[in-house]
Image (cartoon, rainbow, N blue to C red; front, side):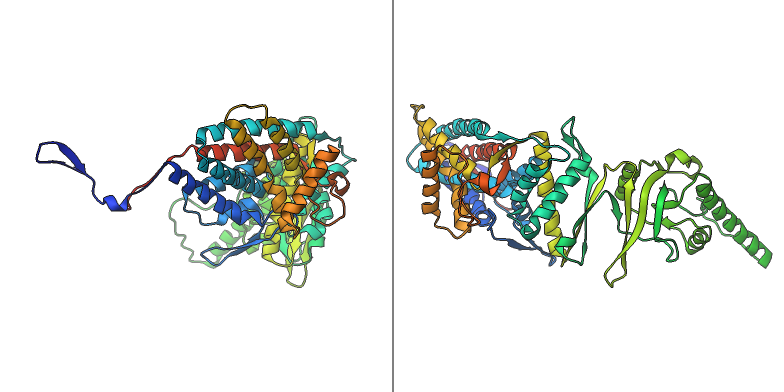
Length: 535
């Protein structure tokens, strides 16, 4: 930037590289932003619903991910545009808060932006559109409260929880086993849930997988699965009523901290050193035996001599177990992690009814199952599948189902799926628009039209005639005053979602409407986009 003067002495500023600075203002800026948001929503639109398509994502280092989970697709996409990044964050916040509905929230935001563009072209001010959207979102959220149903569940009555998890899993690649996976998810959540406080700590549920077998072999283990085996092949493969010592101290003689060199010039001295080391190991093993331990799980390794000694003294051991797994084992068995040998006491041992080593297929892969624990509040969902991608996608699907079960325990209200809730809200918002005399009523009507995007996308992805199907369901809802009519994606023959058992969580739906509205308001308020030159 430079200051210059004209022939009359008036100052003016010369800006360097003026042609490289791009600047969008007013309506152009808003239209550019809207088209960026819509293009992201368009990518996810085809992934919505039980018949939604999957996306294949290839990373720069050649890893391939196949998924139809909205949050995962956007997380792994290379997005440069700042407005598109807002859509990625929108999906991520839905994933963090609710865990499900990540695709729907982006499709809804894209549809709201599309409707806003039409209003901007008519000359309506963006702030008035944003205010109208805010009013409409409140009406929609209140209407969702009215059409929601509460249901009771308990330890023995889990059918309604299972049905809701099945709705979530029906749009995933694993939908052929959705009943089994939904039951596993619900049982896992109930095992770690505190029903009095209505709280669930999902960190206590470990989701693990191993390639091989088929999806139907997926199981729920009331305990912990560790991807390790016994340190010596001749150690017992099954231990009943195990007392487990959980150690984070190395199982070997202490090494001097200083640089040292030991000169051994006679056989006697070497023998004495060997005996000393042997004695040291012997004392350590004896200490474990004295407190009553029948299995040692160690964070660090131990050499072959220690291994041999442990086998001879009949004390099974597992080495190189990770820190997170150690914590889960300690929680499950009720044991304490012991950092120093001197602190090892009988009270700090964990209790497990059965510890067994299980081998898989012909690959000699073995894993350790720690079951029937003293505190069964740590459980493992162990997934099998034909390949790594299948297992990763199943893990993501199980995560969604676990989140849905957790949300239902926190708040047991449900709305019906298949787009029925969106159509009911659209009708309610359309009716409420007449009560507002100002320009906002245009925005409220536009919001009602935007809500129809989700049932429309569901019909489109299921191969039905979108407009025809949507108008038929909408007129049926108005005629029968029945908010449970939705899109019959699976061709069952009825549009009543109660009969099809398609449920969604109320808080998930409300969060979708609120988050999508907030992001769209934010995008509409941007009227100037300045891209600086690249230096």
